[in-house]
Length: 130
Figure 1 (cartoon, rainbow, N blue to C red):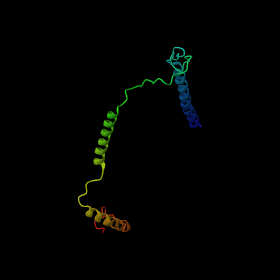
Figure 2: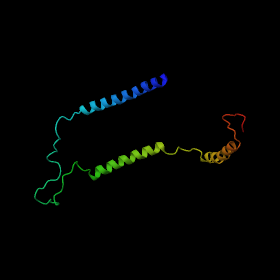
Figure 3: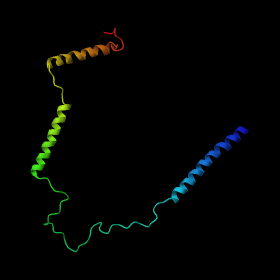
Figure 4: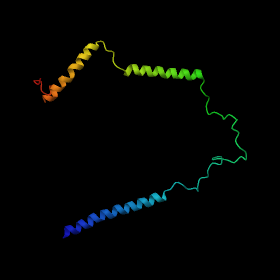
C-alpha cells in the first residue's frame, strides 16, 4: 500500500512540476517581446501611383545594367565552351590502347562471373574455389 502511495506522490509531483515550469516559461516568453513601438509604417513610395496620365510606351525604359555587346556575348560563349570541353576531356572515356583486348575481356567476364555465382563460392573468400 505504501509503495502505491509513494509511486503516486513522486510520479505525479514530477508531472505537476514539469507542467508548472512550462506555464512559467510560456508566461515569460509572452512578456519578453522586443516590439515596443506601434505598427511600422509602409514606405511612402511603394506600390502603384496615380499620375493622372497614361504611360508613354514609346519611351525606352532604363536598363538596370549595361547590356552585352555581340562581341562580349561571343567571347563569353567561347569561354564557356572551352571550359565545357576541358571538363569533358577529364571525365570522358579513357584512352584505349588495345580495343581488341578490352572486347575479349568483355566476352569472357560475363561467363566467368556467372560460373562464380552459380557455383555459390566466392574466390575472394575461398581460394580453392574455381
